Length: 174
Image (cartoon, rainbow, N blue to C red; front, top):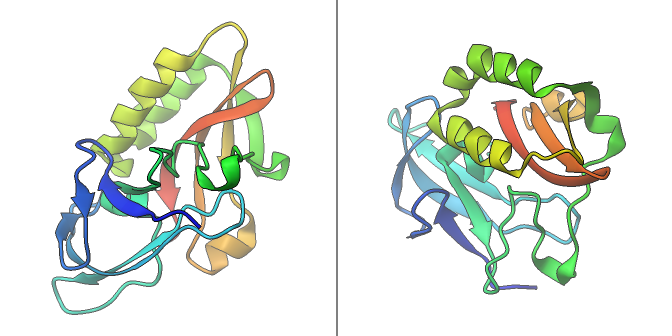
């Protein structure tokens, strides 16, 4: 198993237990515990935080605190790249809701992007730069069981020749 490290999505600075962060909802938190990505495709790892009022979170996707796990070779979870075992994450077909146009995606980002946070907007801008004539955009949502467990997510995913490239998360179930 790789020696994962948690990094800031923008600066790539390494993060550690005890560091203070701001969630995409502008809540101040302190990193309490880390759970590195496992051996299942798509497992992005989890971050546990303590809120300002002293309460603790359930497991959160690292993106909630604008972070992601990176392995020693530079592969990052959260961008569609799975660095362990040289595998590429394949978003399950069942997560896809409907194919959308670039204009429809822009409308969705305009309506929902602000609530998702500035990192979602920045990631959307990066994703648009990867869009080409062989690409398709899809809305997606994880299964209902993940939402019941407060671990769901939805957003927009980019595919090229039916292969998952990356996604922007617009809502999480925490």
